[in-house]
Image (cartoon, rainbow over all chains, first blue to last red; front, side, top):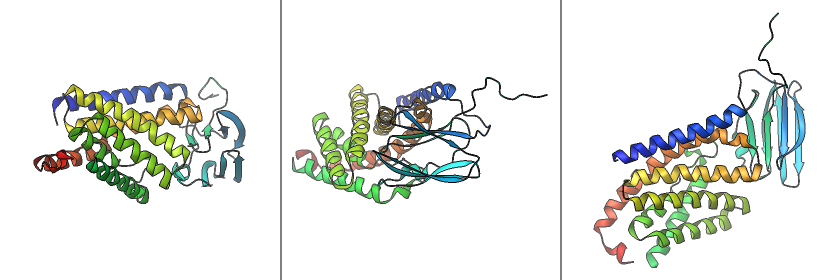
Length: 123
Length: 163
């Protein structure tokens, strides 16, 4: 390891952090649980899911099929008909800005917040 | 030429082993990138064209054997980004083997992230870039040190460079 290698690593880390931050700022993940998930297929909105109802959904499109399960306000992909099944390993999402994507099926599920400009309202 | 064929098959076996044991790292979508050891080794021992050939043949073969069109597209974009960057790092002569490997690892992930973005079309994906950078550095360091060890050993036996 030379000094240059360390500089390279730090530079790459900073670049990664910067790109993450820019995109995170526009799509700010919060700790507030939201109850609306939007499914995009091929970057077009496909359907909205209410997270307060525990239910299974089958998303069948021209690209493939994913089974989505909502349980206790959390959403995850329970099965997919692709070979990798990486989307089933992406975990459960429930907070604003969290997402699950399935690349082969061009599927993107994102938790979206209500269109409110205030964080919380107190009386 | 024979040596290049042997190297390609070694890297093909590496990518097969990795696809068999995704449990190496319990994080979705992250692989060690063992096949990159071979590509980097070829780059060091032979040159740019040879390493490019080994990488491309490996990707085409592994997509034909174990993958599909999408995995080919993802692997190709990752390879192209990482390969270009590794060539630049090597030509600059300022970086050691693990350094080049780290650059390649990170750029591989960025290339794939970009490909995924083209495919899915949602900018939220890029919020993962820090995560991918960190894992690119870690896996790049591991494969880089492995590559350095192999490089130091084969360099002394000159049968390989006679090819």
